[in-house]
Length: 212
Image 1 (cartoon, rainbow, N blue to C red):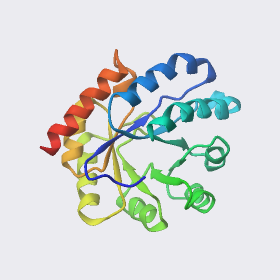
Image 2 (image 1 turned 30 degrees about the horizontal axis):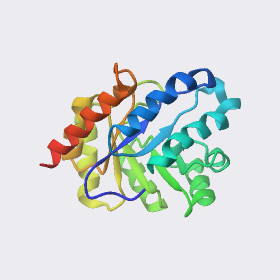
Image 3 (image 1 turned 90 degrees about the vertical axis):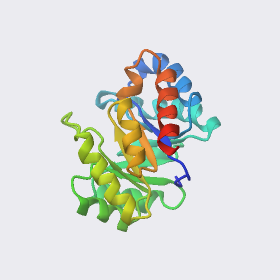
């Protein structure tokens, strides 16, 4: 996933089961059509592990025609089996090393769940295609926007590896773009909106204003 000259959007799906798929797929397709979406991180609900390949293949089918890269959360093997474009791995431990070894250079490997600047630098030095800051943790805690802005500014000023900054609300899009993010990630800010497409269109407009 190469950084563009202007900031692009990165979608993060809710944890999905096969039961959710028929209702979610049209919203996902509409969101992809509403803005300049570079990538989508597909998340599978813990109880739906046996349905993961089917879920992912459906999302890949919707994303591929629009040149949107589909990434799998924390499962490099599943990414390859489902025909996804890569994996997004939490942390800088064995899972990141395994993903890099098995997926590079044909597929993307991103790193998130980075608790410290040292973790981010370790991920970049290991060869991650991007680092992500500010995404919700597994316990539900989301870092304050000021912290994500500061981390993004620090990274953008020093490193060439692209940076994805997570926006927990649409109002965070412009500050994160201004901080130097190559991609702004959106999750519940899109999926909990009355219209996913309208939320993406609004985010796209905010990105455009931030670059003026």
